[in-house]
Image (cartoon, rainbow, N blue to C red):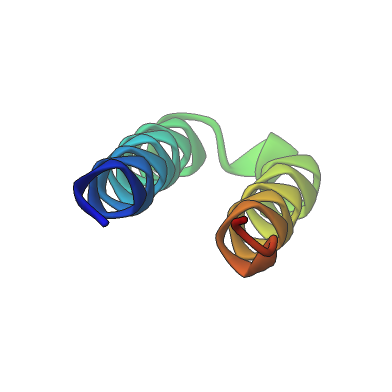
Length: 56
């Protein structure tokens, strides 16, 4: 159980960090906002997939 919580916490921490960095990049370079939006969406999808995997 604790391993699951650590994995969830790690995935959320990485996701929040990536999204915060992408937010700063969009603020600094608005011309690449569309591409960074796709990267942010891919990050959210990857985290959702990681968190939805069954654990045995």
